[in-house]
Image (cartoon, rainbow, N blue to C red):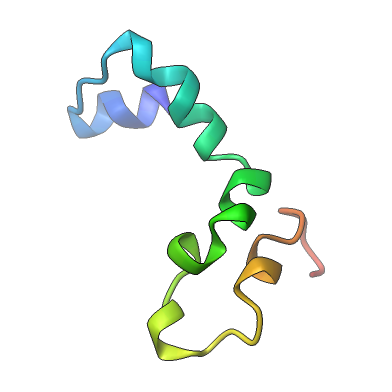
Length: 59
C-alpha cells in the first residue's frame, strides 16, 4: 500500500496506516461488501459478500 501511494503521489499520515491496512483485508471488505464490492448498484452479483470469499483463484 505504501508503494502504491508513493507511485500515485498520495501522502498518507503515518497514524492512518493501521486502519487502512485493516480495511483492505478480505474480512473487512466482506463485512462492508454492500459498499466495497464493485457494481453493487447494478445487481450483477447475487451476493456481494461472496465477492470477497477468500482471495484465492478457483472461486
